[in-house]
Image 1 (cartoon, one colour):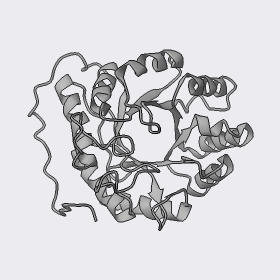
Image 2 (image 1 turned 60 degrees about the vertical axis):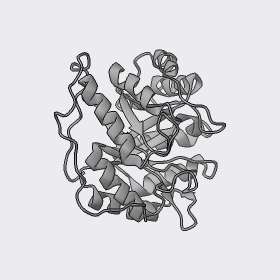
Image 3 (image 1 turned 135 degrees about the horizontal axis):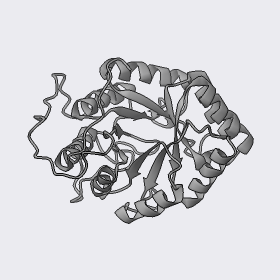
Length: 288
């Protein structure tokens, strides 16, 4: 179980407790996604990292109360290892939906060095989730199967978010858009700043080259940031009109190097930042 678990309803921050600054009112409402665990981290990285399905569901409830709209879902097997097992995914989706009924769920198809593109596609076909993240870099390992995956997602109504790490990934993504391998309606992207291994903290300066390389070829853009600079990068994204993804998958520390209490603290940080800057929040829909 997660440390300090309390089953009573979490206390929300007063809506008018922060005086907003001017400048972000005209931007699209902000969407906050939380990625609470990822494929590789364990409780040695943070004692409150959710690994079990029960803990993931509880974390979803906490983060929803803190203001998150969406859960980026990774699951683990009985040994705590990353898995794409459809049956385990179904169990987790059910638990999260019950714990946080207004939380959207996006599954990951991450290979993490364990799965090939055909196996990633098989998970997508068996689950047919409402939303899934797909790494362009991983898809490029098998052009033929990747095209089948993208076509299936388009036909089945699975909302794909394309994970882009650098200019090379962006070039591949744009090439697939150009020849219609990726449908024009599937242009939601996640820009990754910083690096997991070897560790490289994200920098605000990484955003501009990535956005320039995209050249507007996106319907929506979200950013995640590795390391203690996560909140600083998110502030820049909020100011520029992007959406944010925070959580223990990318960062477990505050800017001063101390451990965050939990994933909900990361969510609260960006919500408070948006309030200060005057950026409105996306509305939530019950029962997604």
